[in-house]
Amino acid sequence: MQTGPDDVFRLRQSPNTCPGGYSLHLYCKYENPDHTFSEFPHEYEDGATYAQAAGHAKKDGWLIHRNGLATCPKCAARLRRGEKPANPA
Ligand SMILES: [Zn+2]
Image (cartoon, rainbow, N blue to C red; front, side, top):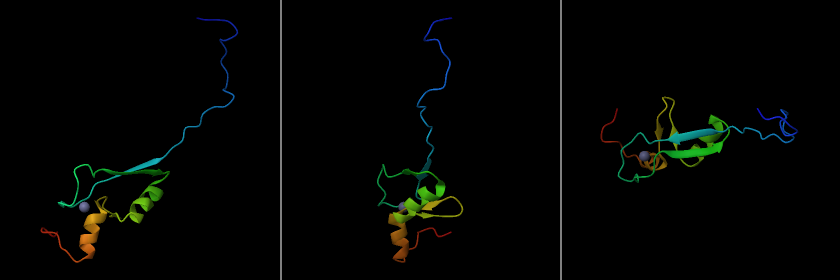
């Protein structure tokens, strides 16, 4: 064990904080040829909470459903135009 003037256990003068954040990774629940290969997961990592991350996603046009699934902006636009999925639930 090292001993000497540098062997001191003490609190740092300027300790780094440990910032937290919320990461939301979204996948669309539809199959759609308009999706690109690298489109999912679409990630929102600029929020500190679920509400902030989901708010950013919704502003971009995502629909986040109560059952945990999501609809991407491209598919949401098709639904708004009145298009129906080929296999309606
Ligand atoms: Zn989609």
